[in-house]
Amino acid sequence: MERLAVEAEAQGIPLEAYAERLLREAIAKHPEPHGQLSVEELHVMLNEIAEGSDKLPNVPTVAFTRESFYEDRR
Image (cartoon, rainbow, N blue to C red; front, side, top):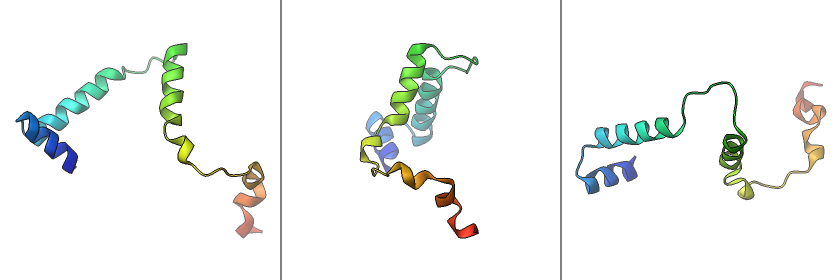
Protein backbone atom coordinates (compact mmCIF):
# COMPACT_ATOMS: atom_id res chain seq x y z
CA MET A 1 0.00 0.00 0.00
CA GLU A 2 2.87 2.34 0.81
CA ARG A 3 4.40 1.71 -2.60
CA LEU A 4 1.12 2.71 -4.27
CA ALA A 5 0.97 5.91 -2.24
CA VAL A 6 4.56 6.80 -3.18
CA GLU A 7 3.88 6.15 -6.89
CA ALA A 8 0.65 8.15 -6.80
CA GLU A 9 2.39 11.08 -5.13
CA ALA A 10 5.25 10.91 -7.63
CA GLN A 11 2.73 11.18 -10.46
CA GLY A 12 0.82 13.95 -8.69
CA ILE A 13 -2.51 12.11 -8.55
CA PRO A 14 -4.67 10.90 -5.66
CA LEU A 15 -4.01 7.35 -4.43
CA GLU A 16 -7.52 6.25 -5.42
CA ALA A 17 -7.08 7.49 -8.98
CA TYR A 18 -3.72 5.75 -9.28
CA ALA A 19 -5.13 2.47 -7.91
CA GLU A 20 -8.08 2.71 -10.31
CA ARG A 21 -5.72 3.24 -13.26
CA LEU A 22 -3.65 0.19 -12.27
CA LEU A 23 -6.78 -1.92 -11.96
CA ARG A 24 -8.08 -0.79 -15.35
CA GLU A 25 -4.70 -1.57 -16.95
CA ALA A 26 -4.64 -5.03 -15.36
CA ILE A 27 -8.17 -5.76 -16.58
CA ALA A 28 -7.31 -4.57 -20.08
CA LYS A 29 -4.28 -6.89 -20.20
CA HIS A 30 -6.48 -9.89 -19.37
CA PRO A 31 -9.54 -9.86 -21.58
CA GLU A 32 -12.70 -11.63 -20.55
CA PRO A 33 -12.29 -15.40 -20.79
CA HIS A 34 -13.80 -16.96 -23.87
CA GLY A 35 -13.48 -20.61 -22.86
CA GLN A 36 -10.36 -21.39 -24.86
CA LEU A 37 -6.76 -20.36 -24.59
CA SER A 38 -4.46 -19.88 -27.49
CA VAL A 39 -1.08 -21.59 -27.24
CA GLU A 40 0.50 -18.21 -26.54
CA GLU A 41 -2.01 -17.43 -23.78
CA LEU A 42 -1.36 -20.84 -22.23
CA HIS A 43 2.40 -20.21 -22.23
CA VAL A 44 1.92 -16.79 -20.63
CA MET A 45 -0.36 -18.27 -17.96
CA LEU A 46 2.05 -21.12 -17.19
CA ASN A 47 5.00 -18.72 -16.98
CA GLU A 48 3.05 -16.49 -14.57
CA ILE A 49 2.15 -19.51 -12.42
CA ALA A 50 5.79 -20.68 -12.42
CA GLU A 51 7.17 -17.25 -11.54
CA GLY A 52 9.05 -17.57 -8.26
CA SER A 53 8.72 -21.35 -8.17
CA ASP A 54 12.50 -21.71 -8.13
CA LYS A 55 12.35 -20.49 -4.52
CA LEU A 56 9.99 -23.29 -3.41
CA PRO A 57 11.44 -26.17 -1.42
CA ASN A 58 12.21 -29.40 -3.27
CA VAL A 59 9.73 -31.90 -1.82
CA PRO A 60 10.07 -35.60 -2.68
CA THR A 61 7.10 -37.13 -4.48
CA VAL A 62 6.65 -39.71 -1.70
CA ALA A 63 5.40 -36.82 0.43
CA PHE A 64 2.31 -36.65 -1.78
CA THR A 65 0.65 -39.94 -0.93
CA ARG A 66 -2.91 -40.31 0.22
CA GLU A 67 -1.63 -41.51 3.56
CA SER A 68 0.53 -38.43 4.05
CA PHE A 69 -2.47 -36.15 3.60
CA TYR A 70 -4.70 -38.11 5.99
CA GLU A 71 -2.13 -39.48 8.47
CA ASP A 72 -3.96 -38.03 11.48
CA ARG A 73 -7.27 -39.67 10.46
CA ARG A 74 -6.32 -43.33 10.76
